[in-house]
Image 1 (cartoon, rainbow, N blue to C red):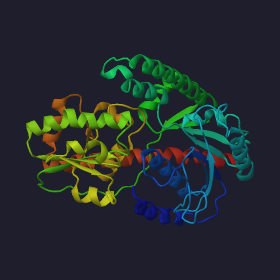
Image 2: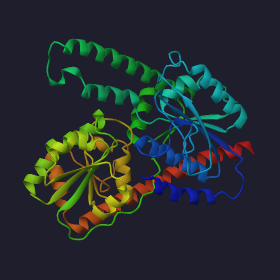
Image 3: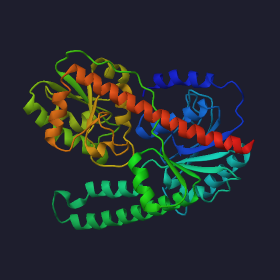
Length: 422
């Protein structure tokens, strides 16, 4: 999403409020704006939704050491396109409040906000907020969590992908492996403890990824009500281009260094593109988009592979050029925002089964390919304009239904609280 798209949404949301907001939700989260990565996109979409429902939204956003956050006038903070109360605090450590030198100050800030704002709901993004939030007196507010992903499984999976002995053993591998093992043990211990406690102190949990809800519910149990609420997106419809050749395929990433994002790059460069080119030479052109792309992938540029790096007007680029999204990410949990953005835009989406962990199995809504041959078959089928149109429509219809269902779940949860207070 680019800034102009967010600005278009903001006036519509502001105008839906015809009476003063009497109910307050305190959102504790990472920086939600500008929505330049998956985390911010999904948090900002929720903030817009809460605003649209008529609730007073108070945001307590945290930044990390070294992040310099300033408004256009030079004051600390961020410029927002909607009118909400916004507060900043700083964190130095995830999970651990004992190690973080800002803990006492942060507890004081958050407690003061709770006492001043008197929220009905304290909404927390990320389970690593559990050690901090569990020390607050919520003054009767309901505690709702929105875990970004199944962090225990995510940490294990990404650690295995970056294991030191992956490319062989040398004189430094043993030391690196010891360091790697200690880090993995610390991460898994911390994430397990926080996610387990989240299932015990929360009044509601709203997962953004379908598989996360299934697996975490089995592992951690608890009696708290759990719901899947897909991230809320609004995207411009990308038209299906008739009888076009070659077809343009996009892979978009917010970075090209993390194991999760690199897994999709490797799949495309080493597996998918060679097979598709061999089967259908010159029929597809693959575009890699995102900051850092040119630095890391420029050597792969060819007639079939175009390296763009950061694109200023991504909406226009996608609308005018792209026919298919191929996102074969094989590592990482949570909901892949780029998958949802493609579906919400009306683009056919091709990926691995792991790519679609965040959403329910839905035949016809996307192509989940288990083998190289299935990738080739998917691309071959999408050469037909009518097939692309049907796939685009199915994906958009499916995402719209998920989004409407999620909005209904959250609306009912909020309405239950207002009814209990009246």
